[in-house]
Every structure is written in C-alpha cells, then in structure tokens.
Figure 1 (cartoon, rainbow, N blue to C red):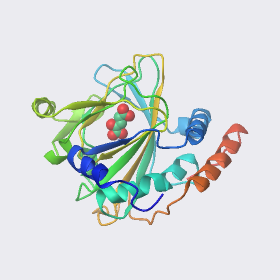
Figure 2: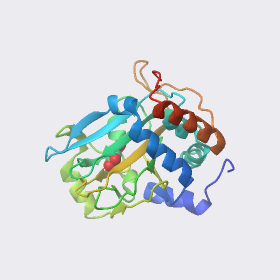
Figure 3: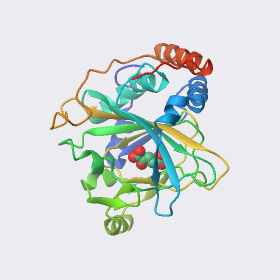
Length: 267
Ligand SMILES: O=C(O)CCC(=O)C(=O)O
C-alpha cells in the first residue's frame, strides 16, 4: 500500500460527507484473530467502563491512551489506517486514543447523537482529528450499527451537554439538522473500516438482537494540533507505520499470551 492509497474521488467523498466506508478492508484472518483475542482478553474486560443511555441500558467501552504492543496497538500503527487518514486530514497524524466498543446482545446500550470534537474540544484547538472504526462483528441496524448525519462535519461544533451518562449534542439542534441532512446507517461486515471526521454527528441504537456488536475505534490527531494544556492526554508522539506482517506478528504474540493466561501488565 502506498502513502496515498485513496483515490481523488474517495477523498472528495470524505470532504463532502465527513466519512468514508471501505468494505472488507482488513484481511479476514486478522479480524478473526482480533475478535478471538478481544473476547479472551481479561485486561480489556478489566478496564471496560459502563455508560448508560436514556433508557438505562448499558454500553461498555475499553479505552486506552497508551500504545502497548498488543493487537489493538498494532492496528493503531497499521498503514491501512494511518496512510488514508493522513490523506484525508492532509497532515501527519498521531495516536490520540483507541477503544473497543462493546455492545452485547439483548440490551447493549445506545449512544446519543454527538460529535467527537464535542468532547475533544476541551483540550484541542482544531477539529483536525478523525477516527477509524473497524467492525469486529457484523454491524447491522438490528444490533446497533453506527448512524451518521451525512455532511454534518461542515456545520462546525455544536453545543454538547449531559444526556444520561453520556455527553450529547443539543437535541433540538440535531432535530433541525435532520430536517436538512440525511441520516445514514453504516452497516458493515467484519473487517470493514469507517473513517470519520471528528465533527461528524453520529449515534447508535441499543442492541436488541441476539448478536454482539463489537468495534475497535482508533482515534488520531493532526501533528499540528497538540493539546493546548500540558495535562491534557494526547500529547504528540511520532507514530510508526506498520505493514500487515508486523501487525499480524504482534497479534499472534498477543494471542499466545492471552490463550496461555500469561498476560503481563501492558501499557
Ligand atoms: O460504538 C458506537 O456505537 C458509538 C461510538 C461512538 O460514538 C464514539 O466512540 O464516539
């Protein structure tokens, strides 16, 4: 993969819509390994936190600012993510954080409409930040796939406030936006990738299906946009770019550790 893997049309599409889906993007065997590791990973489970939606249903997420040499960190380094993102943001990028979103069958909670920069604004000047969501499981409308409002990243930052356990965009404003812009359900197969801008409005429904919906989200910041206070997490650090072979080798090591129950404390 070259340093400019996306076509001009794909870049234009991202500029207009605020997101870009690449179907079947990661090799199937790597996604199977990621899924196997994540489900057996006691450390991932141990750091997961719960967030309630307005109906009291619980979504879980396992978030890290550190970049240990494990399967999640390896994917953060992957050229498959970093190179397209640099093309889309027209800047060098580095790791901000990454998180496994865990939506369990029959009740995994919803996420309210928000922009990621609605949260991140407290530490960064520019919305020159973006994420890549990797579907670990098949994501459908039934199990609460991500929904986005196409083009909403061009509206600028919207006021956010407390909604249940979460921080959400002003609901009245979102209602008005939905009269003008389209809501899109991002259904994705395992290994598909969704690149999205930090000002894109997104949400997801609760999971009322028998199928889990796990997804890994890797979040990046432009190198020219370090936090404006030293205590804010996400200070600049050069990010190495790894090819598939290195990503796979790290994942295989991680699997060995997890499957033998020999997890050392990482990160
Ligand atoms: O996983 C989801 O459904 C929502 C994720 C999300 O909104 C976020 O991480 O900002």
